Image 1 (cartoon, rainbow over the protein chains, first blue to last red):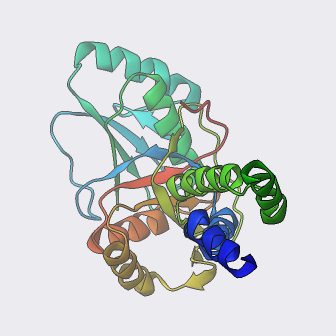
Image 2 (cartoon, rainbow over the protein chains, first blue to last red):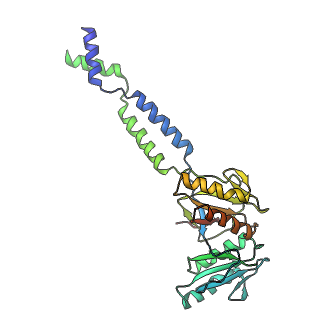
Image 3 (cartoon, rainbow over the protein chains, first blue to last red):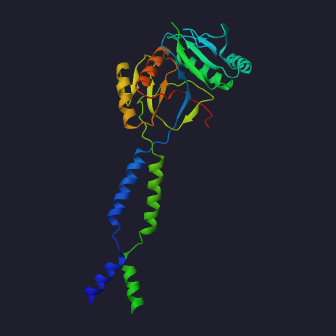
Amino acid sequence: MRLRRHFHNDESSGIDLAPMLDFVLNLLIFFIITAVFTKELAIQVQRSGAAGGKKESGSIMIAISSEGEISVDNRVVDVRAVRANVERLHALKPDYGVMVITNQNAQNGVLVMVADQVRQGGVENISFALSN
Amino acid sequence: MPSKRHSDESGETGIDLAPMLDFVMNLLIFFIITTSFVKEAGIEVSRADALTAIHRDKGNILIAIRPNGEIWMDRQAVDIRAVRPMIERLHIERPDDTVVIIADKASKTGQLALVMDAVRSGGIDEVAVGAAGGSGE
């Protein structure tokens, strides 16, 4: 009687979940450990042309010298004036992108600041090339 | 007798695992979905501030450029010539990955251009330059 009841019990309880639970918990621990929630902050900048930095027609030109001097349309401007200049030129030529031509010794901080200003000025299409 | 047996049985089996299993399964699915295997650069650089920087969901290969021009990828300093094969390998492993180049404020744009070219010749066209202090989206 006792044995029979035991058998009956086993049958009604169905599949044993314990090994599956072990496996699932292991998977869970693995994914918790490898999870990374940081998302990188970044600005999309296209790399255009070869290192020669050939000029493309149809873009607003911004140049950065090796000392970090910024010039828009061959006029030297302050970094805070880039936004206003881009806004003005963007209003004149709405389909133009921005081409940033930098000296190879210019600092990347200046490039990112200029790209940021350009985006604030309303142009998303930024490409970047080196001058000689 | 049947009801007595029933109560006896539930006393024997202990805690009901089903709700816990449901919960664990939900957690598991959450972590599987949110996981992204980021290839950390391995060093901290001082980033340039940019108000319009946006969070990139898939930017998970990080390449750092130090002020002296050193390139760090996957927690090791690598040569510029090693960037392309590494990108090629990572691109084959996970074709959805995009690259974020975290260039130090004081690093040179010449080095950034070289790294960008190496990444593009390695097969990944989506390249962005890392920044800090953006409002996000």
